[in-house]
Length: 266
Image (cartoon, rainbow, N blue to C red):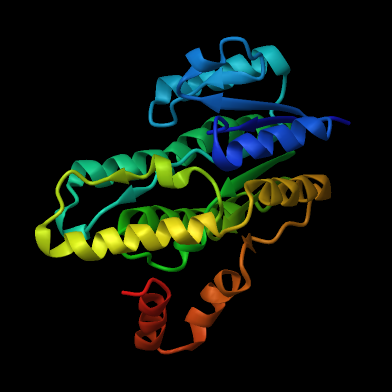
């Protein structure tokens, strides 16, 4: 039986590929975007700004009215803020959390009661290896993903007596358009500029050499077909990146920090 699937942030990157792969597989997959005007001719898109509660509520109500129950929610919408911790404003940091963390909280709080009422549903979160490894000059991005992973662990326990499935997929570097969508902080002190520029170049190099987003979409298709018995998280990407969270747990912290510096040539 086909599932009704809602995918946030489906206009580019992972979300775009996940939407295409799931639709090809026969699922009733619907994407969301903040720029709905660009998709006026697409019936498989809904308007959504995860930072706005009214927008979240309207999106869910529209989905239910048009397509019926939500069987699967894929929380993919997110942004990347790049810059030194020292000069990142509180407002910039809060916006990163509003999108990457509280946006997910809003979606889940809107959807969980619906899934609980029928005692069935899947909530899949697109997280990141950066949720286990602090990435220099992307501290607040990593912080949102660290927070997300703890949130997921707690939520899984709270819904353990239901048939709701809650878990994350944590990709490493991938060849998406994330480099073009990176947001730089407004203020960068001159003593950080050179190293940060170097770091951004390294990030872009790693991303261009990373896996194609369709590979992740096909992996997610396999997971959705599985339907139950999910692990709390799945690492996805290059071998070293998949093993980074495990390596971190048994090497001295200073050694691990040195390895990160070496990877990014800092």
